[in-house]
Image 1: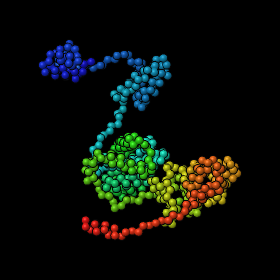
Image 2: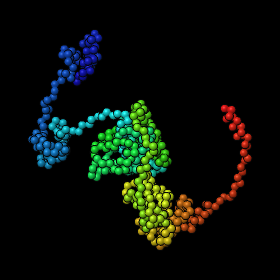
Image 3: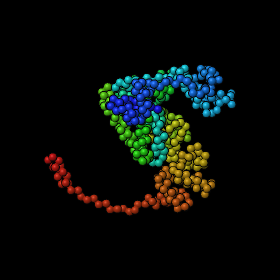
Image 4: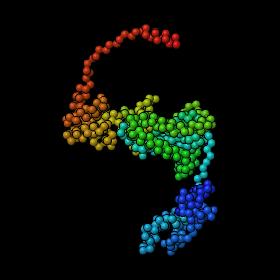
Length: 492
């Protein structure tokens, strides 16, 4: 088939003085065809006739009216559903290969007679006017910390005009994560935009009942910074389009950079966080000009950050546990019956009593989880060893897998006294050193020896004996060296 470009080149060569034969040869078309287009003065696309006739008979002509009625009744019907319906009612009329024909008919019907589709209206962004934020899951990137899978979210903040962005690691879409992320962003930014927009986060919006009402804690946060709150409609993620697109670009960048790095494992969360900070700087390098313009329109920050930590008054149960944010945490048994103040952060929980910080615990993700520390209850567990076997939180009392191996060995070797012997080992770990006990158990496993409390204690005592007192010699300090240094500084 002759293209428009071929005929345009043909005319150009003719205008340069080439003969029709030579120009046609250089263009790659026949001389007769060349003369036809030169004579008509039109391009192939202009001579092409519209295809308004069918090349084959419509296989659905007998059911077209029925199909149209079904679509008018429910426009969300899929072609495959209707095709299976037609096959059930006419087993010998339609073959599976005709599904594509019906799908084309559906697409054409929806384009010509179907309901109107939602229109996206591009918006003009003004400097300093709006910022958007949302949470995005990073789990599909398979990040690990010291070989352990690290499931987490990123609180992602972006200015819609300059596309300057930043974010922090978090573990849930809680208000504490929202507050920490937002405040970290605006203080890094050095100013406050006019509007902050989110989706219908339960941390910010009262999703039950009035959708236009923001939560008290979120309202206090935005009042502190003098920002107008805004939210998108339910199911309309495109209204938070800048953030949604930035999620994709961020995760793609992290994924690609990890490929170059050659490893997705980090030695610590701090090291991973530092890595993310560098990537945000990389993303922001291309926004400097627009960011400098936007920075001029940002309003001043308040005098200090707002303390948004949630506080709960919790009573210690007789189980030596407290319930915070629908999760269970153990505390020392001496606190049973007392009331503690729990300060809930995005990643940790502080327990206070009588104006003293007692414990800092990692905040559990989700609900109905538990974190039981054996040191809190070991004193009474030693007195009541029979309670260990059917203890609800028994699995939490194995600090490492070697402690579990020790327990299984003792239960097999001492069916009646195994639990009691293991509790004595656990008490030794609590009172002495867990790492030393763990190393001693490993040594007994490697040497294929019986695991016993006395043996472990003996190994620890042997290892803790001092090698001997070494003589420490401290050389006298020559004070004149300092005088000379000060004279050099003064002369400079």
